[in-house]
Length: 443
Image 1 (cartoon, rainbow, N blue to C red):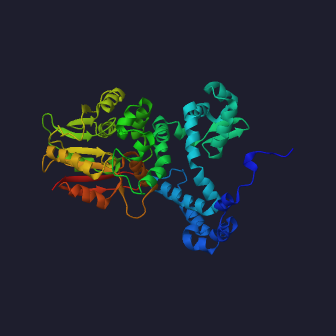
Image 2 (cartoon, rainbow, N blue to C red):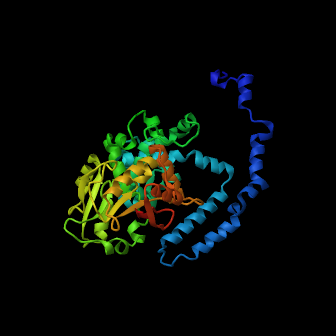
Image 3 (cartoon, rainbow, N blue to C red):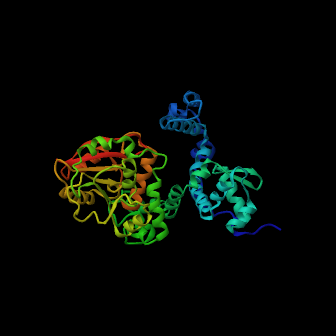
């Protein structure tokens, strides 16, 4: 009996016409066009598979016999192999990869929620069966089989047999709590905003948002609250956010690795009763001060952590004894109560605000500084005008989506700081995967 499903009936001619591809842009002709010499002309050497293969081979020859690859060579190899991989893609491969990117984060988030990845790490090389994982997690075996099959396809896990799976290096990375928190934070909080970003920008004439309380975040969550206030009301999200603020640097250089703190700061510190060495303004969980104390255990001078009440409470609760910092509840839009500190430190604070709000923060800081002694240190991205890195661009779009804010170029930093009477002493940048150190003083 013939099927009579309404969905199988031919479309009216007018609707058919709407969906037609013009004759000169048919699927085959379009594919042929981008596969022809035009594609080669556009991509140039970037599509030269032979040249890219030689670059990868040349870099591979520099790998030490013990396999201990330094960070620079590791990144060069990653960049070169990625270019080669992209050059080997067909147009269809490219579209499939980009179109399904959100699914990767989705399935990984599901696996984290069910604790599947941790179970595989704990199982070691023998792995676990789907039925075992079903009993442990309470999830349906059929669903788990489909999840694990997908995760194996993207190398997050390894398939040993038809229903047996084991951990890979990616599994182990995702099982590190501070890194898992990053996936949870971005999927639960940030990704829904990204999904609404095209819609928001279309309604705003495709202009970058400039109002903190009229950002894609407010549009997505239908709220009048700012981003930090909104997330602070949601305990699990807030916890993941704070943990991720520590974990996002894992595997990347710390600012103390390339900034000579001893020479630039400690050498000029005046040791006096109640003297303050460093105020970490908006310092979150106190990780920066803890790290500083660990690197310089005999350090002199008070280390003060400032943030809002909820964050300071979490920081105090989470701090391992002996606590490296003095907690202080403070809103950086209010006058700075700590006077004459050697440094006022801002990590990933200024990036969260438009210039007018930043100037307010800096004016309060300048009023508390001791001229000729105090310094402002900003630990944030300095985006290059040409060749911005993926990490820098990821963070820039996150700032725009969640806070109507931005990452800044070197020229942006000079203009912003100069407009409030600050002079940039120096900018230290290790690479495009690490935040820079911007040192400034009153003019």
